[in-house]
Length: 162
Image 1 (spheres, rainbow, N blue to C red):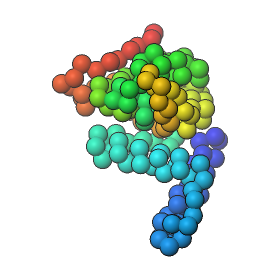
Image 2 (cartoon, helix red, strand yellow):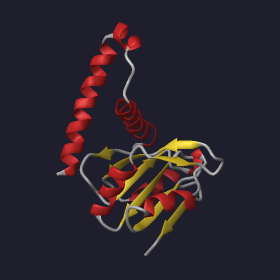
Image 3 (cartoon, rainbow, N blue to C red):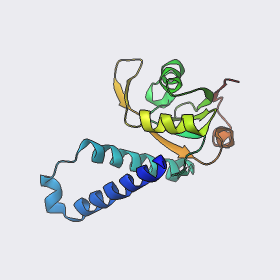
């Protein structure tokens, strides 16, 4: 039910953004709201993951999430990210590819991952160097271990908590 409401909100905001983009004279005079700015970042993160890595996000809730802006490439440490993620439930595994600005997290249950998506989407966290970043979470259909092939030459950081 929550996912349906979220999808409906996303569709409405996407239509609004498209209509604003169509009218270029209106675009320069119109200031986007916080939710519209975040939606734009979320859409950009989805497209970037798909285009560069072949990682496709889904709208239905799964146990696995991709955390855009929450990776080693952005200067976010494992301990910092894990602290934030565990506030929403029991983390089963965390995959942090080196030099990538995203990571993957798998929760024990779908309900916990849904809670994390709702709670942490758009949340500001502090990097280790004191800068703020905004997290962007999306569900992924495949389990996080299926993304290992993307990083076969790198010693990626996989933490399993079983």
